[in-house]
Length: 152
Image 1 (spheres, one colour):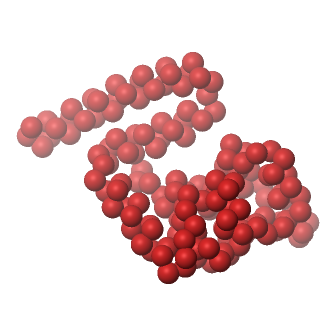
Image 2 (cartoon, helix red, strand yellow):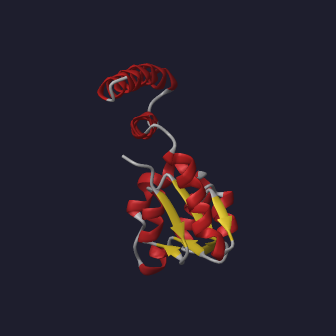
């Protein structure tokens, strides 16, 4: 699967936060706000928890989830929910920079690496190392097959 890059140019709340959490990279306009308003509407952002748990410190996560308070793009950056915060006019250019850097990479290696990253998140370090060794072998075999297919 190809990397997923979010360009956040509007307020990102509720389901938007869930979508954001599933992106690999994110660029946000400096004037957007973020938040989990479900608590203020008698709900709880259950879908957001799937990716929020490993991304944010527990105390800060519960603060945002229980209060439903909005926070600005600078705080989203500090919480590592986004990679970059830029002026609104610079969002497309910042996304294009990531695309330009990624498009020169081996797409098979990127897809396998992305899959491996998500597979390793819940693993303990010894299992991660074992998985990484298997992943490396798989990636090298895929690269060899692609080279043969190109006639190399």
